Structures are given as structure tokens and as C-alpha cells.
Image (cartoon, rainbow, N blue to C red; front, side, top):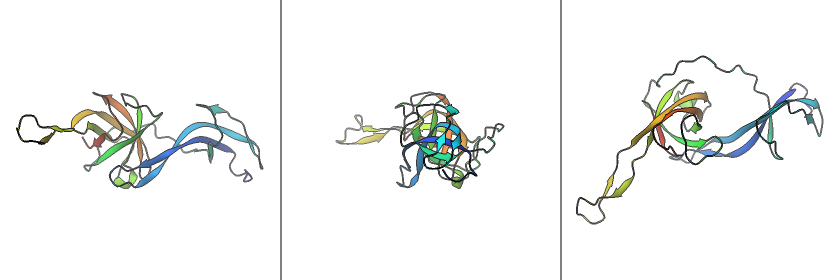
Length: 181
């Protein structure tokens, strides 16, 4: 680090790509915040004092100038003005089932008009099962989508947003979808 105009850096652990399940579009890359600190010595190598950490710092973690923007602390939960549908594409800390108060990434962002405070219903897609009643061989029936909870968006980017699962009425999984209530 030779540029002395930036003196505080955030550290991130690089994660995998965020991919739109419908279009295969690359939406971005996961970056898990792991800490922050000021530069103690500039140059190559530079030295950073780890003033705050949330998890282990590893070889290969990335540095970015600290985000010093003021966080939005006051907002009103509300539904988007247009009908939107998207998918849960990731869950922070990679658990397999998502429940109340988990943070998730969805494949909707500011380009679709998302704002902090937007609320969505979460749905589990209805499975297609063998129809045992029709009497026709290989006949199938699609079960209805099931309401699984509520999510509120708290951070938006161009193609991806992060939301907090405010209510979960059943286990939620990656690729379940969100819809304007």
C-alpha cells in the first residue's frame, strides 16, 4: 500500500459467485467482512493494525478502503410499488436451511428498483409429483407454491440485495423465491 490517501481498510474473505438461477448472469461475488484497521506502515509489504475482527483473517483475504458511508438507520418497511419476483441465492455463513433472523442475498437490486425497507414474501416452489388419482400412466400434478415467510431488504447493490428473514413459517432453502406481497 503506497497511496497514503487511504489510511483505514476493511478486510474481506472472498466467496463464490452470485449467479441468477434463471439467466445464469453473474451478479457479483460474495465478500464476507472479517475486520478493519488502520495502516501502520505503508509500502511493500504494508502493515495494518487489526483494530476489529469478526472472524479469523486468512491468507488470501482482500483489502478495500474502509466504507465510511453513513448507514441508513431509519426506514419504513414497505412493499415495492411494482410486482417483482426473485430468488434467494445465498445465505450468510452458508447454512443449509434458512430460518428467522438469517441474512440472505437475493437476485434483485437497484436496477429493479429495490430500496432499503422493501418487504417480500418468501415462497417454496410447489413440487411436481406423480398423480396417483388420475389413473393415467406417468401423469403428474404440480403442487401449489407454499408461503414460507417474510424478508426485509436492508442493503442494496446494483444486481443483488441483502435481506433479513423476519418471519419463517417453514424451512427456507436457497433457490426458494421472493415475491412482492
